[in-house]
Each structure stands twice: as C-alpha cells, then as structure tokens.
Length: 132
Ligand code: ZN
Image 1 (cartoon, rainbow, N blue to C red):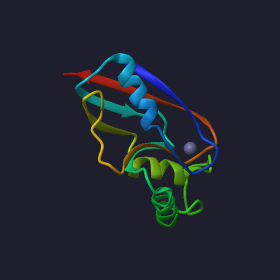
Image 2: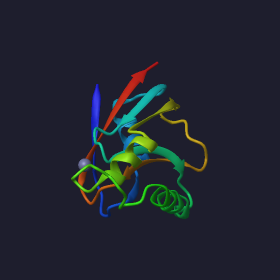
Image 3: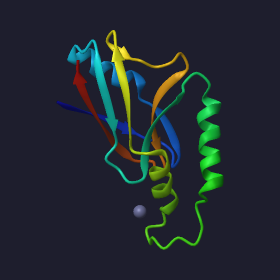
C-alpha cells in the first residue's frame, strides 16, 4: 500500500508541516504499530523531521542552507535551479519514523516537514506503512 499526499507550496523556499496529514493516513489505514516511510519523488524538494513548535527554527534552517548553497554560483545546470537540487540531496528525499499507538513516535517538539526548494509548485509525497 502506498498513499500519496498532495502538497501545494507557496514560496520558492518553504517548509510545510505534513505531520497531521501523515497521521490521517495512519488513522485511515487503522495502523497501531509499524514503520512509516515518507518519500518525495522530486529532485528539488526534501523531507525532514525537526522542530515543530517554534517556526523560527525552520526559518533558520532555510537561511543556513541559503548561506551554504547560494542561488547563484558557477553552476553548469541550465535550468537555473542548481541550488534547489543540491539542497534536496543534502537534506534527503525521505525519512522513516516509527508508529506506536496509532501515531508517529515523535518527540514533543518534532514535526515532519516537506521541504520546498524550488516552489511554488504542486508536489507529491508518498507514504508507505509497514505494519507490525
Ligand atoms: Zn533543474
């Protein structure tokens, strides 16, 4: 079983909290315990788990990535979005989380983020659950 989430980003660089959408899938599938694999099939986006309570954290992560990987540099890729491709590779296109008691086993401050690096766009996130 693979389920898909649709994510509509509004900015070129944006972290979209998809935690509740993933929880909806876990609920709908009736999963109490297992593994949840969250993957985005795009070359200029990523998935990460990080602080969900204070939005200044993902703002700081985005700013740090922008300092590390500037929009303009001596890139060869003609599409003009090499920074987004590099950020996607550094952050990674997937994450795995445990499911316990019908929910992702996240720390108090953790959330699952879809990371947009070349928006705004319509994106997809695949969720594969392996039941215990
Ligand atoms: Zn490109």
